[in-house]
Length: 203
Image 1 (cartoon, rainbow, N blue to C red):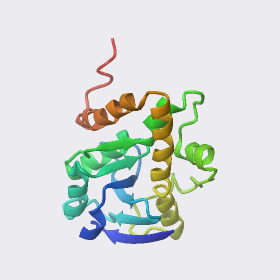
Image 2 (image 1 turned 30 degrees about the horizontal axis):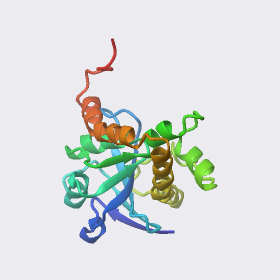
Image 3 (image 1 turned 60 degrees about the horizontal axis):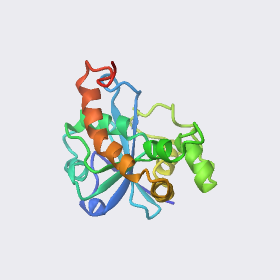
Image 4 (image 1 turned 180 degrees about the vertical axis):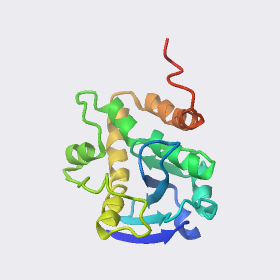
């Protein structure tokens, strides 16, 4: 596994792809309080590209924003709702053409309630990934080697997981249902970011 680290933006040649696995690291899980610190990218070639934000400066990322809004590039997340929301707060744009392995797993693997990335890697790929750095401090000006390795691995397997989950969704006749959910995620993220909405589908 190769890892490249950049500050504030991706090189322009990295974003010339058809699909990219993505993840984010933040200082917490509150969209209106906690900030974006790192974005991870992997194009399915075993190479991870990490964009670090040592300070909350988000107006130096034209290539990242261009990738997010490019509807021809599929963005593969695990729990896309949060990542799309975090990126929306930081950059003021919401990702287009989103795929979520967590949503796909919930629709495809109805025989289990285990849908975390760690569980998917274990059950579908036989790979045990570490989540030890998940709750470390990502707002530091310099990230540790352990954090960089953790961040790289979090996007390493998403393309493989998508392929397996898609095959199950197709076999069970649920792919169109999943696609509808994926198409709805950016709008749900916008509702989360705008605030004031609990559950618009509640009674």
